[in-house]
Length: 148
View 1 (cartoon, rainbow, N blue to C red):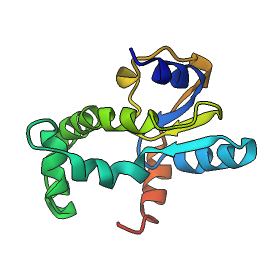
View 2: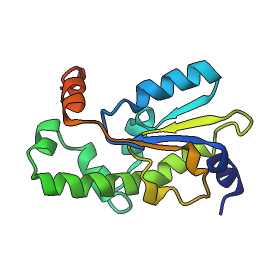
View 3: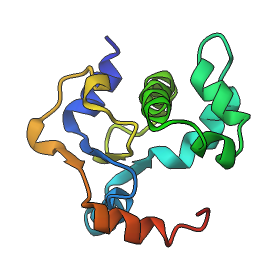
View 4: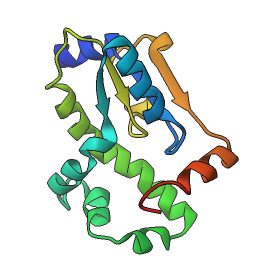
């Protein structure tokens, strides 16, 4: 077990949960108010996808070569399966990124990729928040995304 990551996870604050639930907005406010480091998983996604390989990250690699229309035209069951596998394949990239963080400053780790099953280091349960929006909230805010 990597002792630096173990130390980081023990003192980090986690904001995970559904896409478009307000995680980034809250993380940005907390980071600004308290001077925390802010690791936003989405900011590293393109780099992670570019480094994916068909052998080690088959879902990430496949999705990196698909259009949004190709992705969204799949069945809901396939999308759900692939999304969960995508996060599992991606997590080692995230752990590598986290190894580069300064351990002296508290950090907020934010993103849908922080699945409870992937957080294998000891954490303080009071530092974990997983957000699930209402359907109305999610649909309203998705409509304002620039890529929709």
